[in-house]
Length: 323
Length: 305
Image 1 (cartoon, rainbow over the protein chains, first blue to last red):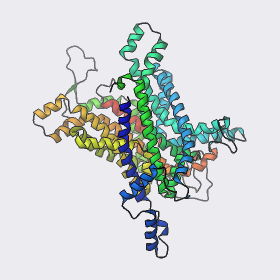
Image 2 (tube, chains in turn yellow, blue):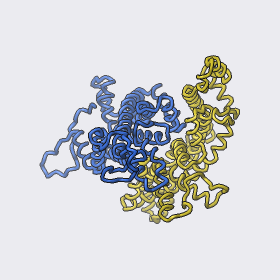
Image 3 (tube, chains in turn green, brown):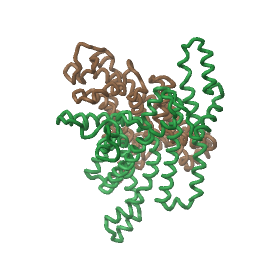
């Protein structure tokens, strides 16, 4: 088990390093921080000076290595836009995003597993068809469109229809002014962004859970259990359900990067200052140091999450532990 | 596209009267029979063809010229003159939605085309020859699994300039990997089959074995993934454009229309500005996905239908 974990970590390191170089190369060659001096008097000299000052006159590999070693010491440089330290910007942005991801993943799993198991147990029932249709619909709907429709139909419409002084569900930020902590206000802010973030994942995961539950329900050992006279309830929850969870773990882990991409959309629509918005603002502002730090943090997060999923996998499935 | 030599297939689904000869059907006939039983896929094909015709024929069909503004009329919801209503600068939404569809559909179809060609090529070679190409493909996929695709596409579009061509290049450059991985897996299992052995024994060259014997047996997964690529590309373009990272006016796409309609969300009287482009977007993706399902069932010889 321990060797397995160590092997996985050792394997992730080169992937991370290569990814960080590619991102560095891509970002550095896309944005020229000296572009704003181009119209200066004797621009050539100023640009050359600035380039030297920022270390841009060295080779891309040397620049990357300096950046990476600094980053590993926690120094991501300073933002071109705000002149703040990138690591503190990332730290501030992480917290709202972690909240969204945390609640999003939990709710998505509960709903997806519930719907998937129901659809499998009652295969071809009206409920199964309903959930199948709904999931097709939500898979086809881009997340940002869901967010827009949710705001229009669940925030704006009730306010206009019932002349409310404030909406039931909020569409801006995570807290009202002066509010903090876990309270009703927080939940009213959280519902729509979390729904927007995970609606597609719920749809996909529930289809997946349905398929894997059906596989298990048709397995021989389930028939054996039924033949022994085990009650249907026990068959479904003790014999089938636990084994049907295993394939879902892989899918959920693989979707981490997709969910982080979803943060960009969700946080933009709901004006939440997390990682997604930081990315968007930095991209539009040509803020290379923030983008580089952002990618590194996100990549490490995804790798760690995948590792956790692998561990969960081997705990759920004893057959894997042997290797 | 080449197909395998049409071995006569016996359709076992028909209960034959005693003594009657079984009807021989080609793979293509079997495919057609199974596909035409998939009602949703059939409807989807009709809807998609309709969308393609009205969008690419917008020049002749659209009631007003593209991007024509009319500041004299007050923006309003659907009416007899403006079926989909008009936006803040008096553009006819029906016209804009049709022209917008041109770009969205073009990107979707082109990305699916190019990523399928490259993906099948690389995947087939990686699966057949294994070795460094296979290793490289796996490592490359690993690399892209750890960073959000949306972020990569966002940066790449910034770099190449926000045009429909750069969308096609970037999305195809990312999309081929999925198809390559699927094809690789298929080729890996098919190359061990007896009929490949037989072909080799009868002196078929390697390219001939890959093109005539292996690839035709992967056609199902390839087609399904091509439809998935269309759907993904359409969604990506709309999402990035909506976020302001993609196409800019005077170009028009469903993403641009939704981006411009964002303010409409604060007032339900302008809900139609989101509704119509959104409807076209969702219907397109939905139909493409149903089509993929239909193709999968039709290409799968084991399918019950």
